[in-house]
Amino acid sequence: MMNLKMLPYLVINQFDQLKALSDPFRTQIVMLLIEKSYTGQQLAQHLEIPRSKIHYHLNELEKNELIRVSRTEVKNGIIQKFYRSVARGFIPSPDLLPHTVEVSDYYREHLISTLNRAKLRALSAPQRAFQFTSPDRDSWPRTTLQAEVRVTEEKFVEWLRKFKKLVAELAEMDDSDQGNWYYVTTAAFEVEEPWFDSVDEEEIHPPSEGKSGDNKAAENSGEGKHSENEPGL
Image 1 (cartoon, helix red, strand yellow):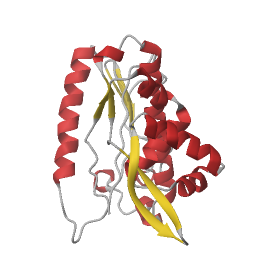
Image 2 (tube, rainbow, N blue to C red; image 1 turned 180 degrees about the vertical axis):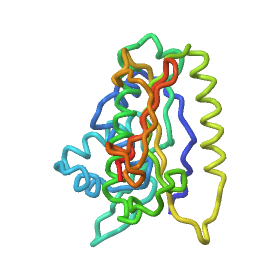
Image 3 (cartoon, rainbow, N blue to C red; image 1 turned 180 degrees about the horizontal axis):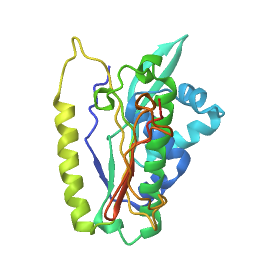
């Protein structure tokens, strides 16, 4: 039985590795293999493609040392190979930074794949995850948020450092005997222009207080705008 540990991240040094990870379909495969081990047949069923096609991509990823065989099992006299990503994340080396298009494509595809996985996690979550439990939104065990802010890159990076520390604090919590599983995903990047219209801020009351309209939180403060995107009650 193989016992191979995943690296927290792998610095990729070869252009062929970068090209392999910039391919949208291969990015999907790697994202799945970061989560758990799969055979080629399992991946083909999961992605709804022919086995021959999946094995071609697996061979390319394995050849570029981005995935590896984590274990083998014998089933009906046939050896099954289970593949796993070699790392939980990949970072292009400084030597590859001149390949701006490929580096950008890699990060874009990785982000899109992450958001697609978040969509699937939401669709497969239990009904109780989205049930209304209290009129106090701050007590809900779920949240959605979109934000647009206009700040310098230095300030945004500094805020991200603080945010990552908060996420690390969450990851260190361990109530394995009695806790529930919660899924958190984030995405943050520069955009060309805002999509939220600037509107005058006004107080929004829930219908129970005799006010009409949508009970959706939306705020505009200075150059920043955000919407919590929770549906009205």
